[in-house]
Image 1 (spheres, rainbow, N blue to C red):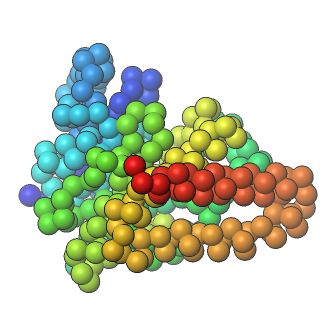
Image 2: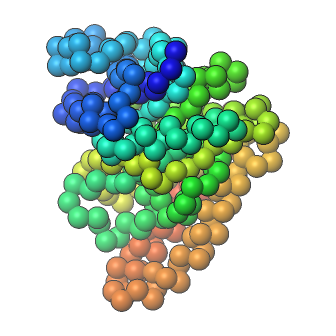
Length: 302
């Protein structure tokens, strides 16, 4: 059992063209994957469609339940490699993606790797949308390291783990993973915290040279979506932080991010285009308030 398996989870026929583009980018890698596994939600129409569309070009599996975490876990269970990578169905990989991911595992203390995720906007990058909020659309944001560095957790659109990690600490939590269009998430965050806590002396690294390009759909380029996604972010963070209540570092990344926000605010106000800078500043802080609101609501006893 060697090489690298790539898992793609799919829940909608509306992304069929994106799925095909994603698979094609994996076939063009400078380091080819041992296998590409597409895991489908257990919907008969969905399964029938992709069996016809994709045929035998990849391994097609049907998840035993709905949701991103369940699909990832199905891929893990059925993969045949020592390294398992994950990419979203609406992303395409840079040609050197797998080569740059896997090189980090030469360090035996590295159990997981995350890479850079670059947004592909439907038109131009909206002027009111600050880079600090790119996590809203599942992409790398201002505040992440600019060079290779240890991180708490990767972003699920672009990550890889050793198979042995799942064997030792378990799989992704199905309590926090995304289901369809529901915006709750952070199975990647919860897993990263749990893995490094249980496997003392190990680390997860961020390598910005391992790149994927993530398509941003039109419906996500709106203030309404930003606010909904921000609220869901806070709600999910509350679940993760309380589930990791004995880990004092569970929210260290968020604390560092808040410091980044304070440092970014003056730069917005001194941009050459004051109107653009002000709109980005307002968007940033409204979204931040929604995150805190979601966290407060999510922290209430059920």
